[in-house]
Image 1 (tube, helix red, strand yellow):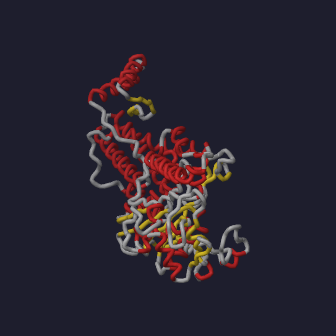
Image 2: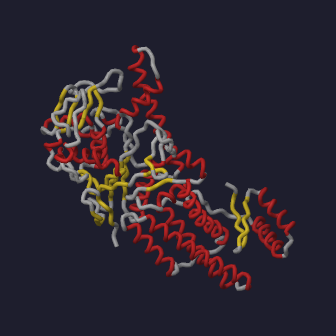
Image 3: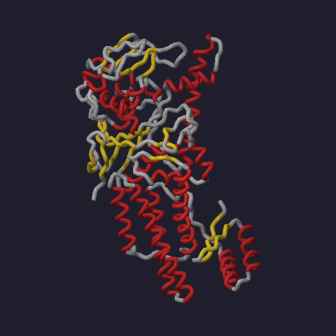
Length: 502
């Protein structure tokens, strides 16, 4: 079975066939850096991290590019709020500097959060401000005129796909025959709700800005049409093709970006004769207790707040994985608690296994049950990244491992070392498989295996023997010794679990 992905462009599940296998070019719309990242940002970033991980797991050589929008109305507004009122003579330069400061601060916040979640950095992370002009310091492909936003806009004007007006430049939507294909909307349907805002110089209400004339005090760049800054949509068209080429494999982002952002990206790129992205992948939106997340409703939840409350990044990941990426997902304390319990069960098994596997070699061949579950995991992930199905496989692995632990405990009670070692070898196989498949999903990175010293292992055995003799005072004394050494001891029907204090 081969990987199949849902392509928004064709509205169908398609076999994944890269343009130049094994290489895969993946571009994802990144953050607009004007505030701390919320859990919706985390979901999108994590989904595409899982996609990249799985593509690599399947043997592909992935180049992952995620942009940063570091010039935008929201960033400018945030900078104005932080500056407050001041003399007009100082305002222009201060606003530009403050915009840069705001963008850098919140980009650092975004990086910090993704690092704590164990989400790997992209291979390239271009900033919009580095690609406005052909000589911008961050543009690597400066020999290509269309590696800059002003270069692309100039070409669109030359091809009669765009027009300057009053210092702005607009893309002419009706001159691009395929407009609306991604979002399944026709220009005629769109026109009913479109209007020209005061101060705009559009020829048609559907047209969108490629270049915005400078406003007083705001950051701007010189251009053939006068000072100004790029429109949002041209940024991603330029940066994706600058780093991945005119044709690349996957373009991703949230479903809220399908229209107008991604629709406009396609129009700009294809109007220049670029094939652009082959597959368009979109993740569903996140609500909080059934409502859209917003500061005005008081339900704006940052990733930092969730991590402080739960103290384990994998809880949030488990929550995200439990819903298919294309579906909407509702955040609630109850849903997080259920994810915590699920994760706790899996981690519990891994900690037991890490104690049992000391000195035990896993079987040279994996048992048939584990091979079957591995195949089931691959089938789930091959079907448009069916992470709920993949998680169900991890749960089955844990159940198989727990049965083996019970069997090993029974063999130990009977003094049957052969059966005990055989079952323990199976436990090791399950544990290694669970970790390996978990890694594909970005899980269990903080659940490190650890080795007990012989002295500590003797203490554990002595304590267990004392418990069986009902010498509970001695048992508690040994527990205190282990605690002083930095271990937590949990008693279970299958025996004690010992792990380091976090």
